[in-house]
Image (cartoon, rainbow, N blue to C red; front, side, top):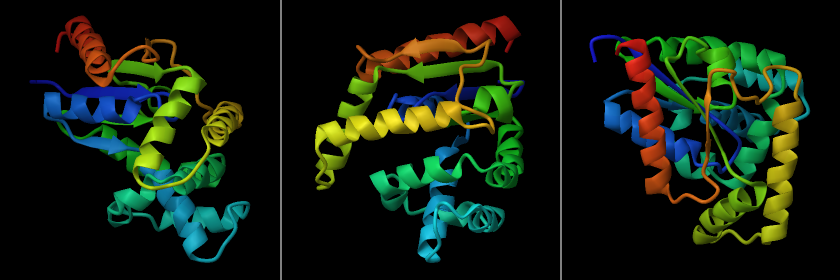
Length: 216
């Protein structure tokens, strides 16, 4: 690729966006940032300091001190508690402001990058040439996350997982600061009835169409 290619992958929890983004990054030889890990790291940082997720100032303090070294413990960062903590602190404008520069700098790396999250195509990288909004029904997403967590040995009823997914969707879509919303120029990819290979193939075709459109 002679020009930078930025791929923005947005969508709700357990839609498949993270797996799709990681595979797109490998396919195009681009660096990948799961921006949700930033918010998960902030949430866990608050809790590790004995603070409350309702304490906006504590969350902002952790966010300002965050660096790449806080993103290495993937097992802990991807558990259910970290996801809930992330959704709680992501609504604080100060937290978002502290992490905004980090994400924007990543998006503008030479050659391009792949970023996935809730507001990549609308806030972090509105200039992205390829934008995908990956989703699926709450029931399917809850089942995916339930299988993932139970495979790790976590015990949680499916009904509780579904309630958690719905609650997070409402919080992420309803927050005042950069709510989760499909960018006007993003292509919708509903993975409800897709396995990962089918979903990735569809995502790859969306990106290829965007490359043609932008002459990349």
